[in-house]
Length: 170
Image (cartoon, rainbow, N blue to C red; front, side, top):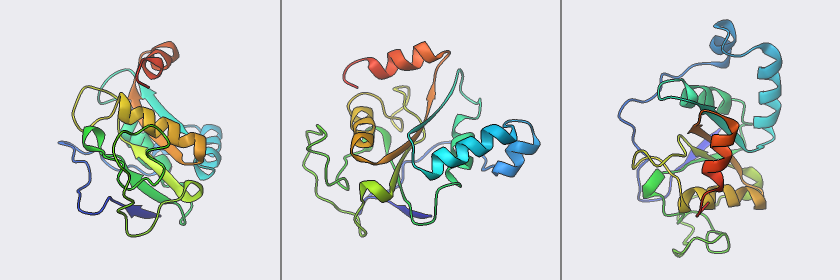
């Protein structure tokens, strides 16, 4: 898997990164059962938008998300979104998706909808490294033109998640 970062910028930093876990470990600990893991593998491999949700901080949303991203085919480019620092300079279609900034395509290898997975460690407005609002709107809209999206998000129920994603400006 190729990872890319917008030129001249740094990856979003986190104070305590999640401990990387393999899918094998998640199966052996009972976090996932084999049937669910196989289904998720197919969905991730096809770059179907994926949202990992749990109620509280520390429940393992990002840990599970990172393990699932190991299922991406090697030709897929993974672009890490930078929360409130995201400018979408690397996204050629940013303007047409509603981003007010000017897209400048600043990555060394061009990103394409059919070979790119956007990754947001957290869709939330709790911390600056997280993205909700206008930045989440652009990430979600990017799926309509073929980009994959994988993200984690806090929520107590499906209704909570849908309500958060349905609030303006998303």
